[in-house]
Image 1: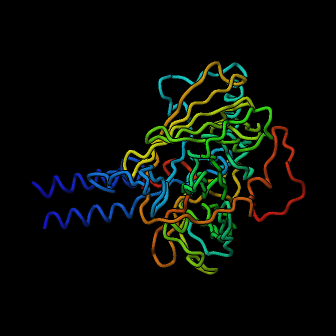
Image 2: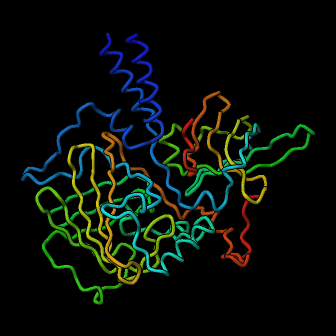
Image 3: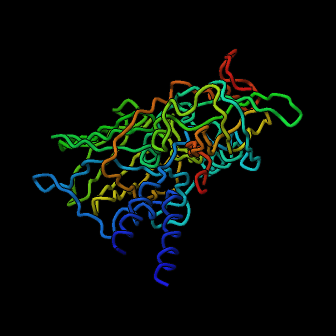
Length: 134
Length: 264
């Protein structure tokens, strides 16, 4: 019983292993790790491409304005290993994104995780160090 | 009491494993690692049903063997400091150019070794979608001056017991030696020692000799874990490099003019 439990535990944890993400360009050159963002918005576009997948969401501010945000994720090969497919997000889906804002303060961010409209939360293959520590 | 201890270990192990550390992966993979696989003639098999899960090595200074510091010359130290000051914005790898040299083995994504009759070809998913050929037919390493300088250089290899020893020269100056802005010249030569002490570990070691950039040779090393059952994917960096299209130099001039992107 103990052995079975341990075997299952080891198998489950092996499945959780996060492979390294290529920093094709430096995270710190563009994004500010000290400027965290958490946004909920409606997906307007998904660019499933290398070296970074981008998706765009409309976020309604407390004042009622709509802000258009661009979010950068990792590349498709890295995303697939984290449970994504190119259809995981569709136009019109409401998603929640955590990550870091661009250094230039615009509505551009580097996504660390995305909670999909299904409720499933996936890591976004961010090149920020320790992006997947929680 | 036993359940609490098991839970504590599970939490610790999960933290280790999900942090992506090499040690966490190895701990999770097997209590006792499988033996080094071999080809029919006894040569170490660097392949198998899996891929090498290359780690992201950002700082060669943390991978030193035998030294405590990288033996910079004044200009390479100055370049290192300058590159750090702009968060390595001008890394050629950000231009989707291949890293070449030891950095290639410290660049995600995974790789495979294909051992042919008289050569070994390493195929890399990252860097991007590039390969490197190691001649194993006993030919001598050519003189650097006779070679056209290239990103990956020219490599010849031989087995010394169970260690693959690879000598390379003929590197161009279009790459950075390391992610964090450590430079090199075309005088660079490397000697790499690659071994597979058990199925799940590739031990990678490289001695860097570049009198144009460093005051003496220096050696770096790291382990690369095996991912049994996994396969390479495709990564074509050049496809949609928005970062590059918007990159500006230190004077605010864009590298590319009038490029429309969707970024705000």
